[in-house]
Image (cartoon, rainbow, N blue to C red; front, side):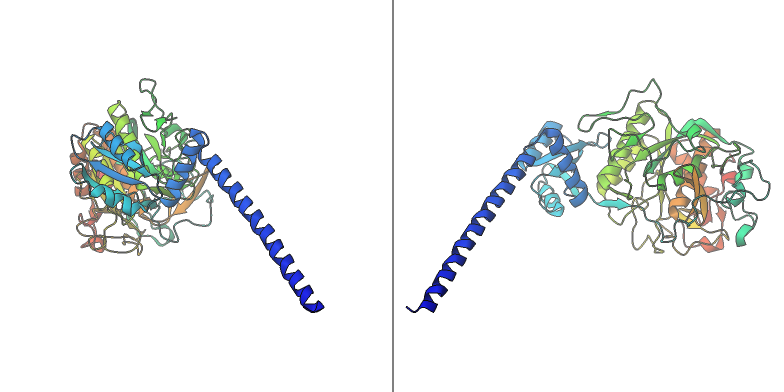
Length: 476
């Protein structure tokens, strides 16, 4: 062997030794990482719970399952445990309905199919879908705090002249009278603190100067909300499904905007006037800062509202300014349960400019006796280009473009969407109840739909053929 070959072999041997050392170190690193993973996964129960909740909201492994009548909660727990699933929550308002978390990281659709195959014990099972706001791209103006001033009007709120949906004088290219006739309605009633309206949304800024006097506070006679699976809630001012230990303060703005349309304090020389100058607004927070939540989150919030109603809170209306194309039987059953408890459910029709009769939008498309689906009109009494419609599935229209209302941090902002139209209807429902508190859900819904202003632009677009009219709705 010549000298050159010797050096070649020595070099190869050195490389082999070095690679072996590196591979050995990599194996040690991998072993260390595996140990760390085990340490985290076997940490305290509280940390494990946080990890599972995070996975639920990120990858949505959660399913909603309705077991057949006669299947006990203990049996449901046994079935879930046998499939390595966890009972997240029992929806008390709907018999047999539970939310389950899969602990195997299986696809949610597969888990739902697995439960559907248990037809002897399961009525239906579905994926827990994601929900978000359904607003058009131009929903919010760039101007957070609007300029004050303008013509003198009643009430004395400085921005009332900009609230064309309540009193349209033809401002900014509008058509006079294309409004809900709030001034006429206020001659009869301006609302009542005896009526509670829930805003099922991103929470409400209950410290807002124009809202704080009209925010619901849990009476001393009503115990704090407790759920067997979820624990005790801080529900002094409502429900927070994104964090049970926190209150329902809005960190997005959308819910606060809806709340102001319903019940910003009127004639207080501040900002705007709500349809109800006096009312109690209950925040039901299930959408987080980014505007996202799940079907299960919405169901749990509605379940809370039903519980509070049964506990003696005079909750009569829920406003739902959001939606998706997922048809959830579990959500439908829970909204039906709200109706059985005497609660009207007002839902935004959606903002895709499409026909809901052909392409359903939920929850507005649920054919339930307590649901009102709301389209959006502009200041000329025209159906907006973004608003969904449907002669069978959409019931009424209301102002929904360039609507000024309350915003986070004592601010005010313009917004557009059926999200803004729905709270006009919810607000008028509360106004009617302030004058006639004993109306049933059916009577209330009928009154609203039969008292519309019929409009050519809405013929063949919504079942009532008209736009909301508060003054007519108050006529007995």
